[in-house]
Each structure stands twice: as structure tokens, then as C-alpha cells.
Image 1 (tube, one colour):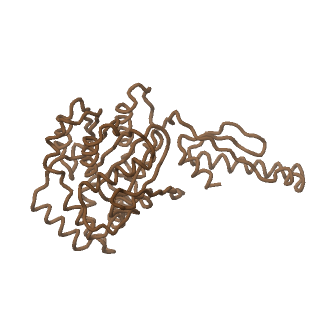
Image 2: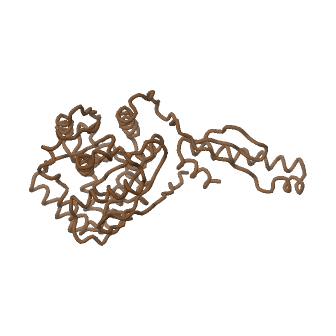
Image 3: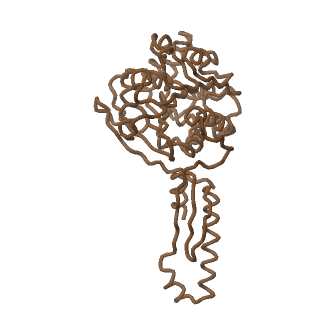
Length: 362
């Protein structure tokens, strides 16, 4: 049975006094995920879409995730939303991590935020990865008005019918009932109806950003699904064509939000990001652990007293059962047994997250 993934939530404060929730997963070079909305750090591990991101990139990088102002676990009482506010959120998170330079991974609306931040802070951004991103207005005005009306009418309702419309656009193919239910709920918990409407209203990138793409100087990779029903494939191609030296990676699919059955797409994306950030590193096979390891030690407290109380035969039975349980838990959490030490184990993990999850399971 799969256990819920624990989330280490921390807070930082923007220059205008907004409390921003963020979380750090994994080890390695720093990679910050930049989103627009549909974000809630505590709920995300229950969503196959974002669980895949956490597990794949947490194995390779110090992956930083955050809820923007007005969403998730960050401050909700925001009077107005501006594009500068989005940049302030990201700036505060980078400051809080203590890294001098970071790679940014912008998803969907977050792509425009990541691009703008890289333009205005080239000394703080080492690399830029974009998925399903856009840098100009691409939506039909009438369609946008209809979608905005749906948000205002029923976003916070217990009935998911209004949100189901967006779910069907974000994942039109191969979505299971669990995928759909989780994404419906993610929309509801990410923001209230008023905030969702305000964020949707400024979703389109600023008019001049597309023209400024040629000013981007950091190494960039652009990934886009061929059949993306939210952001047309041509938007991704156009962005890549205007950023000097950018690599464009087309993905074979239609889902803007990946489903549980698309683990291979996460691996393809991660490999593309590896080639961007660590071009000299040897290619990794799917599931291969990173070069960073977390070591976990286990020990039976009071082992000597227990053996004296139970006797040799009964004591050895307890030790054998302890070894069986430990190996089962290690296997379930991706741990590698290094050696046994009588009443304890030494094991290693590809990420801090999995080591902590394993310790909790004991």
C-alpha cells in the first residue's frame, strides 16, 4: 500500500510582506520549479502529475517547489495580482535557499515568469527549462471569457463539474478516474474562486515578452507536447526559435498535465534537463540513482538486555524477524542494503526524501 509522501514546508517573505511557502526535495544542483497556479505543496504528492515530477527530479537535483502568492499554503489575502508580484515570489524563494545561481524550470504560465526573471536577473539564473510555456497571447477572446465565467460560477463548489472542464483540457488522453479526481481537487484547494479568476485574467504573458526572447542569454531547453490542448505546440516552437541556441524537444502526447501512465515522459524531460545542466555527465538509465547518496543506520535499542531476557534462541528469532521487516521496508522505499551489523543495518538512498520516508515506515 502506498503511503502519503511527507512534505517539508518552509516559509520566506517577499519584499512586499507576502509569506511564501516552499519545499526542498532531493540533492544535487539547484533546480527551482516555477508555476502559475494549480499549486498546493501539501496536496501535490497525492496528484500523479506532480508526484511524478517530485520523484523524477528529486532523484537528480536539489528541487525547490513553492506556492505563489494567493495559492496553496502561501498567503491567500492578496488584494491584487501583478506580474511583478510573481517575480517577487520567486526572488524571495531563491534568497531563502541560499544559492547564488539556480536553474529555473517554468511550467505553463510559470514559463513566462521564469523567462522574465532570467531576463532581469541573468546573474542569478544558470539555466532555463520550459514546458508547455507561452510568451504571448494565444487564446481566443471569446473562449477566454467563457472559461473565466466558469471559474467565477463554481470553482470552489464541492461539485467538480466546473473544474472538470479544465481537467479535460489539461489531460485529454489516457487519464484514469484517479488522475481526474486528483486534478479536480488540486484545482479546488489551490485557490478560491476569486483568486482563480484573478490569476486566470492575467494568464496571458505581457505583450513585449515575446519580442524580448532574443535577449535571453542563459542555456535553454524548451519542451512541448505535440497535441497540447492548452498551449498550442507552435508556441513552444516559436519560443525556442527566438532564444539563441535553445534546444527544442517535442514530446509525443496531448496532455498538458501528465497522467500516472506517462512516467516515461518525465524521464525524457529529466534527461533533457540533464543534458542542459550537466552536459558532461554520463547519461543515466531510467531508475538509476544519482551520484549523491543518503545513508541510513538502524539499530535495536536495548539489544543486549533483550537477548539476556529472551535467551539465545528466542533472541535470534527476533533478530531474524527484524531483518525481514527491515529488508521489506528498504525494498519498498528504494533503499540499498550496504551491510548488517548484528542488530542494525546500514543502507543508502538516492535522495533524502526516500531515506526519511523509510525511517518513518519503521
